[in-house]
Length: 446
Image 1 (cartoon, one colour):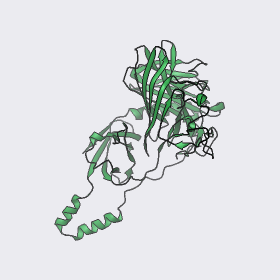
Image 2: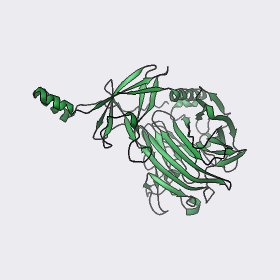
Image 3: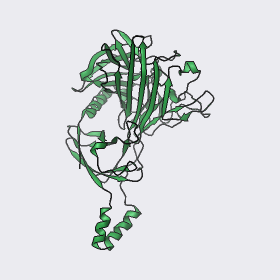
Image 4: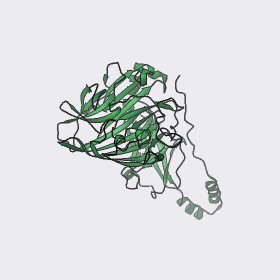
C-alpha cells in the first residue's frame, strides 16, 4: 500500500488582535499620526526565486546567506516568509560555524518549471510554529548504571570504545537524523558507519528510540514500530554513505570495528550544528586519524538533511593527504545479489545503485544509491567479504587537501512506498532526485 500520510495544511498568516486595534487607531487618527504609525510597521524584504530548469521542483532547498539580507534587526528576531498566495513558508536560521550568529536562512519551496515566485520576508519576536519535518537526536550516558541523557555534542578519545569501557555509551550507537521520508544513524562508537532507518510515517520518530524504560541503552529499533525500524545489516561495511581512503590496493577505514578496543582516531569531536523544522545538520571532526604509522589525517564531515527526499547530503574534507590517496564511499552489499548499476544522469552527478531484497533476512525490497560528483568519479570496486572494511561497493573519487567533496546517499524501502518494490521505479526516482538537486534557482532580494 502506498504511503498516504499527508502533512497538515500550511499555516496562513492571520491578523492578531494587536494588529487589528492598531489598524482601527490608524484610520481614526489624523494623517500625521497615521504616517508616524506606519513608519513603525515591520520592515519587509521581497525575495524572488526563479526556477531556471524545465522541471517542476518539489521541496527545493534554498539557502540564503546572512550577507544577502540587510533587513533583520538583531539576532533575537525570527524570519517570517509569506508567499504571494498568502501561505506561510517554513524556514529557519542556522548557525553553521558555532559563533552564536546565524549564517544561513534556509527554506524549502515548490517551484513551477521555468517560472519565478515571490515571497515577503519580515522579522518577528517569536519563533513561528511549523510542522516539524527534520530532526537530529543524540543521547549518551556516563556509566553503565546511569540513564541516557539528551546531548548535542561529544568528544570521543581513542580509548573510549565500548570494548574498553565495558558498555555502549550512546543511544542508537551514536547520533541519528531523519526527515519526513527516511532516517539514518552514525556509529559514533569508533566504527563511523552509516545505518538506515526505514520509515512508514511522516512524523518524527520518538526521542526514546534506543532507550528502555529505565533509561538504559537498548536495541529496540530492529522490530517494527508505528514510525518504522532499522532495516539495514551493516556489519564491517561502512553502511550507506560511510567513507575512507584507498592507497594503491589498500583500504583505509576511518575508525575501527566492533571487535577493537583502541580507535585509530585520536580524538573525535561531534556536534549537532542545527536542528529545525526544515533542516538538521551534524558535524564531525576527526583529529589525527592514523590508519598506519606513516600517515596522519585531519578530517571534517558535515551531514545535512532536509524534507521531501529519501536521502541525506554528506560533505567531507581532508588535510594531511600525501597525494596517492583516493576517496572511497561505501554502499553495503552483504544482502544484495544483483549487479551494481552505474548511471550517468547528467554532467554533474554519477549514480551507483543497487536494488534487491537486501534488508535484514532479505525480508523486504530495498533500493540503495550513491550520488557522487561526476568530475571526481574514478569508477568503483568491491571490497573483500571479510576484513576491517568489507561487504561494500566502493565509489572511488579524486580527493585533494582542504577541498570539500559533497555527495548524497539515498534509499527506497517498499514499506515506505510500495512502488519501491519495482527496480525501475527506484531507478526513476533516483534519476529525478538527481535532476531536482541539479536544478538551479536564482535568488533575488530587494
